[in-house]
Image (cartoon, rainbow, N blue to C red; front, side, top):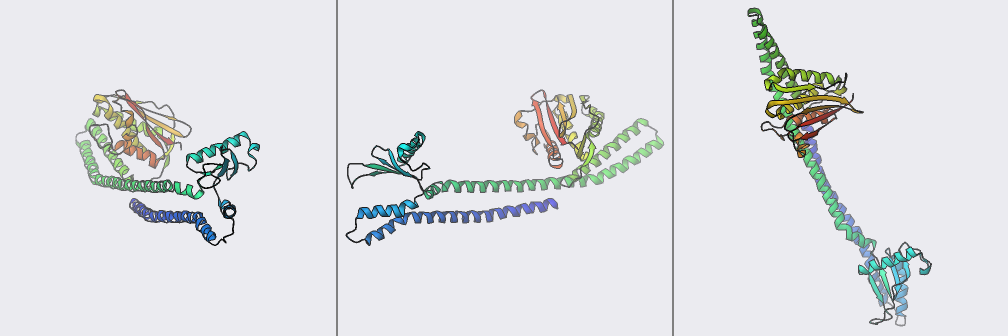
Length: 408
């Protein structure tokens, strides 16, 4: 129920994100565009204002003096972009909004003079240059006026890129949210499958346990067959193990309580179990315990860690060519983690499979669903906040998989 509720919440959040996110972006673009339009309107307002004043001028007014006066009083104070005036040889004589002191050109440093000249070249290349003539259509050029882009023009120029970035980020986060919902759907399927498996195991296992106890009692009372009694004891042990496996499936998707355990004991028990049953796989497999430490204390769920180790050992057995070779289990401590390594002399895998191998459904075996390593990954990463990886692997020589658990 928890997972279902969590998944439903994520869907609601995703819907909220798309609906209100779209509305927010549209409103943001409208506000930003209106601000820019307001600035553009203020910039072009100069033309009708000048025209209206020009129409109201008396006939005896010096038009050249009026235009110059209007330019200095109404246009220059509103300028927020660089202006450079030069002589006919393009030597700067006056400038403003350039970040360079407004003093005589010859009193500037060489670097400041060079900056002014470079600014003139860039403005000319952009077409932001006006030729100054003594009168209209005169062939004589008395100087040049170079000007940069206003703040409004710059904002308009970058506006499409800004909008594109915002839309792309919106889409990327939306896709990420959709991926989370899909992952929740997969998790829900995993949990349902696991719990149903645990439930289905329960009844036949209880029945098997009862029948096995009944057979054991009959053999002990009538036949006194020590070998048969030992075999029945092994069968009981395997039935108990199946009960534990069912219990493990029941833990998938549930909250677990981590306890301080000795990892060495878990590893020793798991190796002992496999050593007794490896002949069922092949008598040529050598299982080597290379753990020398006395204690390896971690905060963990013993059952789930044992499940992880079993999956890794089974994976190594499957990787051995013709069911023969060596599997080594080693463990050691670092500053923050206990490292457990399972190495085999199997067929190995290419480097491109190192990360993919932990995904559900991905396997290098001819048979199987590719769930073992996926379960191990989930147990280590999600439940124990540890790490798991393919430490190294070489085709035809073998593989080493390492998982790390925080020291407890």
